[in-house]
Image (cartoon, rainbow, N blue to C red; front, side, top):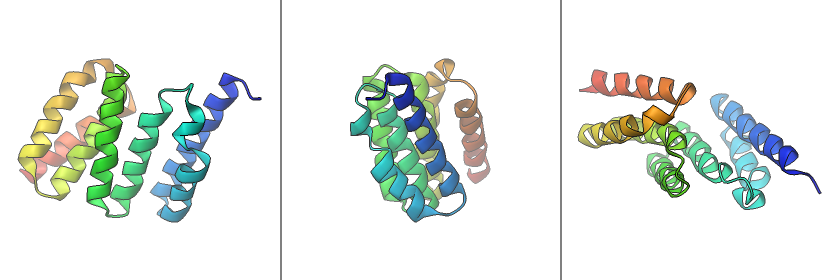
Length: 143
């Protein structure tokens, strides 16, 4: 049996591979990796995998133009982050919800997500904060 470190590395690599495939418009392959090789039920000991799995599925669905499905996965990611008391992990999924709301021209809803993400951003760092800044600018340009 693999130890905890190997499982963490494997899960992390699979998530990043799915991200790269999504960015390359290889939606089917990214979906297969998320469905088959990165199933969060395989990683019960790694609580961060489940919200990140939903977040990356949401990114894939948004890239494929499936706004409702993307929003559902982002909502689930935020819910799990809140249950895990991991607010920094919720900033990325909330940023994705902002993007979905802007695409739908639901600017009041997008602003509500900005407020929620801003409250959680004190615990966040790096890419999540950059994504929040980017989508906030996107929202302001849409207003």
